[in-house]
Picture (cartoon, rainbow, N blue to C red):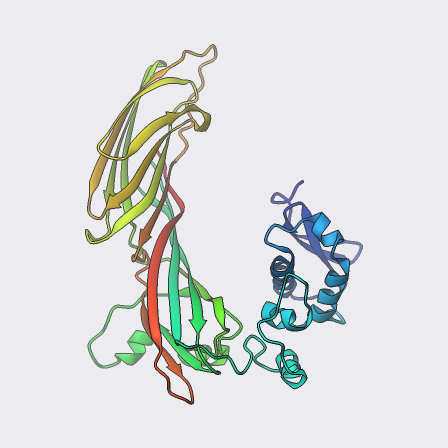
Length: 387
């Protein structure tokens, strides 16, 4: 009940209880030694991911009770003597199987042993595809908080690179972003090209971290199918997709007016989709007269806000909204707290951080041709403007 307000590590009588939550269940790890808590949390998250693969995304207490034999098997394979072991779902599904989970091919015993004990347990040998293709999605969330005076309180982008690989054999891939450190190194003594300072990189375990530490190159043998290659954060030179200019005027206790100007900062060749702007209004609002240049705007009393929905917002466009509210008099007048304006949106083929894929090279013995597809999507994280 208190999850979210309580710390995720509890110390009781020289024992550390480290826990996380899924729906109404707690997954708890207990230790008496001084372990790395990040390792324990990662194991718990991987354990939940494995259970989702076997029991479904929304598995609950009943599905856990009905599959206790399976859970004992998974515990046995994913941990030995308190040390995390193999947590790769595709490998576990080869030899721990349910009626509803069928392995793609029945592996040979020797091959299975290699998969379990080998260094590359995320990919099996002998994979074949008619077409060799790689799909890359660069997905970013923009987090913004602007004060009433227009000062930026928070401005950052969190991103992840999602891949779907359909490659034959055991290829080695080399992946490059416009990382500032790499570009400065490559263009030493020559013309300087612009780059992006990429911080807090977190990689899939297939990435060779030694090579990344040495020369910032991302080299890996990819798993087959969908996986998350990396996560990153960018704090500097963020290109904000939207600029909001609000103006609020309170006239006594019975009237209030709000004017909002929204400017799209991205290219006119692009457009934003599913734009939803929630403009807060006083709780004692009885009526709202709204005028807006395009889209649909409606006063929704249950949210104490005017919700402005725009299906397609063209780049470099400017739109306006003005609203006059009638307020009900209250017995005990209370100052309006003025919550921030919240914006939700999605801009395809745009990155707020400026990150873009420079190259993806695939090296294989047979030297086959690979088709590469790259897509960029920027969404709103916590995009707020105080009024």
